Structure formats: structure tokens, C-alpha cells
Image (cartoon, rainbow, N blue to C red; front, side, top):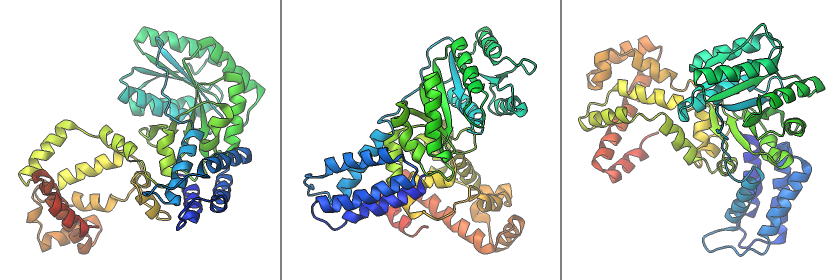
Length: 442
């Protein structure tokens, strides 16, 4: 996400490289490029101008600390301003109420229905909530069916009245049903249009008045740039919503909406959608996003995603296997499955400081593990549990069965052995040996 903006900001901030002191001249050169980068990202001209002006005021006259060069100081100032521009800090949901009612709003195609499912899954798995999804899009024939498919996928009940064309009645009946069935969160998926119109605004306003939601969220397709910001303003004038959801941040987005929507509507971005899977939802942290835009990674979010997939009981079993030198390919395969659940690979790589910049222009397929999985699945159960039994003739059979070459099987075996040794060293505290081994690994 924001690859183009990140590249241009990185190039702009390199203007200060080699200077011993921040001066008006080199600050002006740098900020001119920063402003261009923001405008290319579809940031409103006035916002981009005010942004660079604030950075300039803070930068001029600053004495560079002995441990900092001007480039590093400027990066810090730009990072702080980006964080403030996007809201400063994360803002959570108001989950008060019995039940809590969350009203989803936005244009058609913004991803409301899919995100409603993601939010329901998030609240169910991370907040232990009993959630009811409500289909109130009575115009798009496939909308309710889509919501029902999503609900079945995540194990959440969907309330719908296919014959009823009154979304106000449907939403009121759904809340009664939620109370009767012990649901403590109701998410109402409303209809969208291709553009803002009076009929749509009247309808969603009537739903809003009837159900008095604790949270009204405006869902916006981040790929639409500044148009998304203008649409958000139109909705906010009618609904006075509590927060914004940015979808499709994993796509070819320039970033203008994420950077400016808070300034225009004065409402926080609460969530972002980062992929098609139901787990591809993140709480929006402005400081972490600023780090990622500037190529600093986002280790905290990476660790949080890893913890979501962490099974303490399985980890203890794995620890015992490693200690007894019994780590096999089935265990390796299990680790791969956990990594895949964390999200798409390019997004994960971008969270590691320095790696995102190094991977620019490199296409990382989400099926990056496909060849490895094919090789492991072509092994017999005995071979997977005892990798040392795999000799030359078995490697030929495994390569043929997986549609790979013997060379690829050998490479996997080598990396598996190195990883096994590293894990063994970590168990025994052999940090220095492990570091030496890592230098020889890809």
C-alpha cells in the first residue's frame, strides 16, 4: 500500500543527505518534493501546502543532534506530521448498548457488505461478541445473498426479510430479534448508490433516526482518492457519522483518502481493509501507517497478527519436538499455514523495517508457498516425520509427484535442516552460533 507515495517521499527526503545543518535552502528543496509527492498521491492542494508549511516551521532553526543527520531529523518531523494528519491515535468502537447497533453507510461498490462480514468476524473472534448481521439493501438482488454467504463463512447469523422492501422496518425487526436471541452487536448493511442522491440520503437518514446506532461507519473505497473524501463529507453532513473505514488498501491506492479524510470531515479512520479474506481487517493506527509510508515498517502490527494465530498448546508441543530433535515436515507445514493466515505476503514483508523498501517492484505471489506445500504433500507420512530417511531415489519420486525438480527438493531440504538447527540453538541459547548460520541462509 502507498508504494508510489513511499518511493517519492523517500527520494524527497534524500535531498538533505550529506548536509551538516538544516537551512532554509535545503529544507525548501526537500519540502518542494514532499509537496509534489503528496499531490501525486491525490492529496488536496491546500492540505499538502499546510502540511509542508508546518514541517518547515518545525525544521528551520533546529540544531541537528550529534546522533542525527538532517535527513533523519526531517524524516521524524514528516512522520510526526503524517501521524497528526491521519488522526494522531487509534480510535476504538463504542460497544455500549444492549445490543450495540452499528450502521454501515457508503456508495455501492465501496465494499460495505464484505466489510460488514469482516467487522462481524473481528468482533466475534477478538471481542467475544454475539453478532447479528442485517441485510437492508432491498434494491440490489444479490446483496442479501452475498451477506448470507459471508455470514455462513464466518459462522454469524444473518437477519433478512427478502419480501419486505422497507429497510427501516427490517432494521427495527432485526434489533428485536437480536434482543430475543441474546445477540449483543447488530451490524446493519445498508443500500448504496453509484453516486450521492437525495433518495439514498433520505433512506439512510430514516434508518439512522429509527435505530439510533451507537456507531455509524462510512465505508470508502480508498482507490477512489479525493472523490472518496468529497463523498465522505456529503454523508457526514447528513449522518454525522462516528468514523471512517478504508477498504482496498491492498490495491493500487495512491493514499490521498487516508491522508486527508480526517482533516476534511474531522472524523477518525477506525478500520482498514487489507485484502479479500475475512481476517483482512486492521484497527487503524496513524503512527504505524506513517511508519509504513516512510519505509520504517510496522513491527507492532506484525507481532499482533502473529499472536492472533498463536496457539500456546501447539507451541508447547512444538517446543518439546524441537528439544528432542523430532521437528518434521508436518510441523513445518503447520507453521506455513499459520503464516498464510496472517495476510498477503507483500503486506507482511512491508511490515518489516527496511524490507518493504528492498521489495519495491518485486511481485510476491500469495501462492509463494505453493511449491513447498506440493513437495511436502508428495512425501509419505514416514518421510515427513523422519526427514533423514529421504535419500536420492526418494527425492526423485517426490520431485516427480510435486511437479518440481530434484534441485528444488534439495533446496527445501537444505533450508529445512538449517531452520531445524537454528530452532535447536534457540532452545539451547546458542545465539552466536545461530547468527553465524543465518548469514549463510537466504
